[in-house]
Amino acid sequence: MTPPAVFTGWGSALPSTIVTNRDLEQRLDTSDAWIVERTGIRERHVGGTVADLATEAARNALEQAGTRPEDVDMLILATTTPDETVPHTSSIVHHRLGLGGGAMDVNGACAGFVYALVAAYGSLAVGARRVLVVGADCLSRITDWDDRSTAVIFADGAAAVLIEATGGADPLHGGPGLLSHDLGIDGSAHDLLYCPHGGTLAMDGREIFRRAVRATVESATMALSRAKVAVEEIALFVPHQANLRIIEASCARLGIPPQRTAVVLDRTGNTSAASIPLALCDALGTERIADGDLLLLSGFGAGMSWASAVVRWAS
Ligand code: COA
Image (tube, rainbow, N blue to C red; front, side):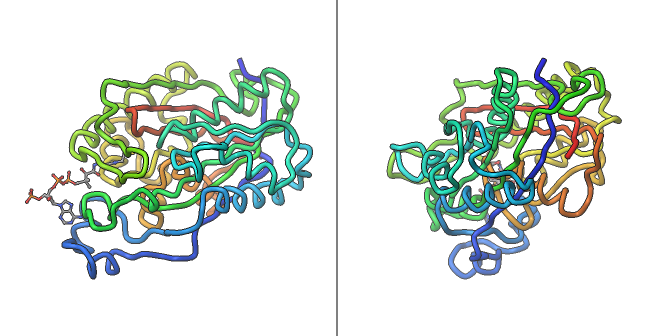
């Protein structure tokens, strides 16, 4: 059992350049109607570096929390597009913000943020007080902009949360924090979505779609069962933002209505590790989350990896 913990700050960062479906129509054999119907994406943000976006998102989270950077005990940066092979991008973010404690990158592709969040609660269990968790990716850098099957999907962004240990009841007895998680991977499917060094993303879209719905439903169901929480008790489902049809198919099978689901991909595209925290921050910005709410977070992605968590929100 991880200790009770609250979210004291959150923030996001998106590049200022917006690429709409109409922009893509100008350079690719595609259409706004096709992209909206098949993916739900209308526009996406493109540009910047992972370090830039992650730093901005993390700074916003720290400012909201009113926490001094040196009082952070750990930075965990989920990214699948590190700016350089060496060093890990979190070292740059750590330096720019003047954080205390350690820093590491987690590469769990689009499931990376939930992997990082679970690792953050683990850090609290072994004595950390405050952990900054950031999801940040610049997929536009590894996307072939002449390939319509990927160029319409992938984009850039970052979002961060600051979690802080607190006193009182543990999460399984009404306290805030992590009630359960489910992490998994089927590495035999690693070649369904890949990018070699110096290359661009290639994927088998149809097969990923099929597996994504199954992985999301099975992983979310496992996390709910471990938390002993019924799906009706979930105030907000925050899924990975890859394709609106994947989200809708998963929600239909899980029994979660659209009004209890966070969707931001129409404005962001698929931002990999940033997608779940971006959707979370968007929901917080529109006051869809209140203290005491149970959240179900669920991601899937390259690997093929998946990760779900049930969290009782308190700020
Ligand atoms: N614009 C117009 N037509 C396109 C297109 C585009 N951007 N991309 C593909 N097409 C065409 C295909 O060439 C195909 O044409 P054909 O029937 O003449 O062969 C047709 O549209 C249907 O292709 P298909 O791949 O079956 O479409 P789809 O409904 O499966 O949608 C994806 C394609 C990629 C949007 C969808 O499979 C998907 O989202 N998969 C999951 C990908 C994902 O989430 N990856 C990240 C995981 S984290």
